Image (cartoon, rainbow, N blue to C red):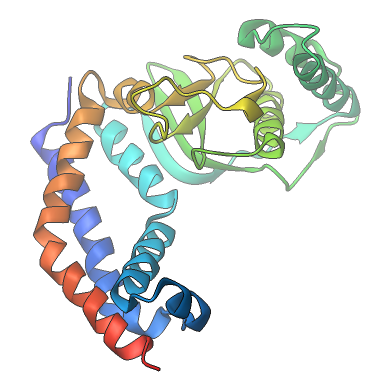
Length: 259
């Protein structure tokens, strides 16, 4: 099951709307960068960098959240982005989560999501209170009565981000008070064609279950070749807007980087 025509149409429209809006509004948003302009000595390249960075910021992680929802919504009982998970966390549950993370970081134990779920759910719920931090889930869906709570991250996080993400994923299980699937997803692999390896990960996340990267994530959502299909859509949209993007870069260079 790869992307069907309805999904392709929705994803294409989403991308075209995002890029079209950026092309229309970009001139008013761009910042003047005189030092970089003088250093690089090529106004068009600086404009290119500025525009590409702006597109990346505009797309951010939200584009991946919205695409994820489009992929699963027709084949799931529920699907939503930016949901509030709610639920409380007790002092004992907080302690158990901290102990799990510390043991993984000092390598006194290896990551095992199934064991970790049992540990956090067996901790006492006494004194549980709501905590606003970590309450928002990037992407959620329910399929075949299994609930999935997903954090979509930038692809090269530092150790603090890996640690805080692990903590959040375990807290989501505690908040729900039952076994649910919590996942950290990276939309692509910056080390391709080599496997994803990041020294800051430190064995905190169980690969293939708790950590899904590139094809693993997209094909998990939509079936075999979903990732391949997504790249083809992005390529088609890029080709469609190529001349407009190049024109916008020249325009920005002309207007913004004059002496």
